[in-house]
Image 1: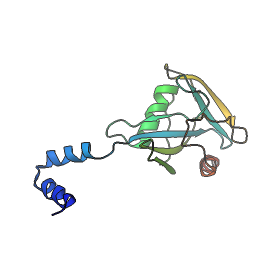
Image 2 (image 1 turned 30 degrees about the horizontal axis):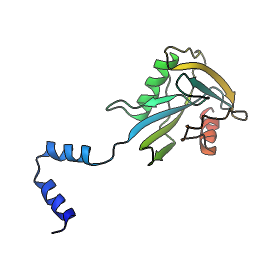
Image 3 (image 1 turned 30 degrees about the vertical axis):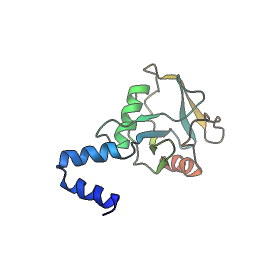
Image 4 (image 1 turned 45 degrees about the horizontal axis):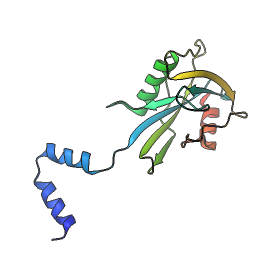
Length: 158
């Protein structure tokens, strides 16, 4: 019996809690995040300048336990900008094996009766930018803004 077959035979005999533990600690862990591409009219994008990074990027954050990507981005926007809004299901998923991260990217339309207000220490500034004149993103914004993201923003309104 080779080593892999032995591992499987031992695994099968473990009680379910130990099987779960073995999988959790024997496989790579990934961080899971969500980014919100927020528009008001389909031609502009709301970007934030975090206090802990250089440059402008879409708002977002990590998923909490048992939280969906849409729930996470809606919670993050409410926490960071004081606005309740809804997002479409993710249109793109960014998977980075090297950084062991997965990021879900969704589009939302900013409520016409609201204004973004920084409500915590994470953000230094918030501003609207034309899709045609976006500032360069930070070097460590690996997810990037792809043409399909900008197209999803344009389609979000009407």
